[in-house]
Image 1 (cartoon, rainbow, N blue to C red):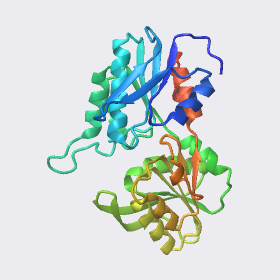
Image 2: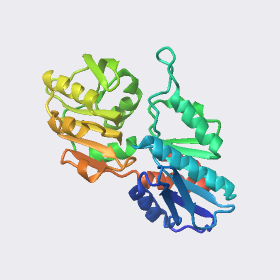
Image 3: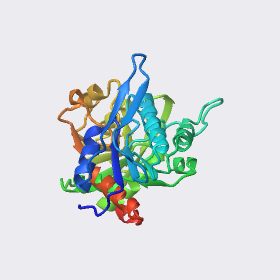
Length: 315
């Protein structure tokens, strides 16, 4: 993809350099010469070693672990660009951290997803691009334009090539029904829903399964896998109910804590994740297959810069 423009700049934070490099290669736009440095007391300092005055700048930085460091780095880059007179500052956040704290579900709870939105806006971002938010209402937390991409079509295209027979799409909870119903429609498969009770962070108990899973091959679709504890509890329950092969997919593979061991031990044939979060080498196991979303993000950047609609990417 050759660009006739000279005023577009791509900047990569340190959270997921390989994804930024792939996007850069697709767009045929080199990444800006930048550096993220640390003082002895761990304070972050960024350097932008080329002019960005009047440019349409896209900063690629998921809020993946270490979440606080990567968030602060993003905010500092935005501030530096604003002070350098960038024309438009676009925060490309493939994974939006703190998205699970999107409502006040108990007394005196913070709504941190809104706080992060305020921080990004106040820092000086003009536009945000993200992918598969944990809750759609987070879009309303921003008073600047937000482009909400989804990896569903990329995941479905990859999975459909396997041509799995007797397939049932499984929603891991009631809140994910909208997403999984779309997947079921795209694959022309029936839908099953897991009814579970969450009693602590990263811990939930399967109460019931709505739909037919006995003797079926299952495809469990979620937006993220963190410790994989909740996911694996669901997998064991589905297997005990008579499921045959079980596959899983998510957009954001956080994979913290005992996630890799949990997935290794679980009755799971394969789990597909995207590269919104960089998968460290020590977490690469045979059960995990990574699907790239660089092409979709590159197309979105292309269309946003040219002032075109991005709804075509959802078809």
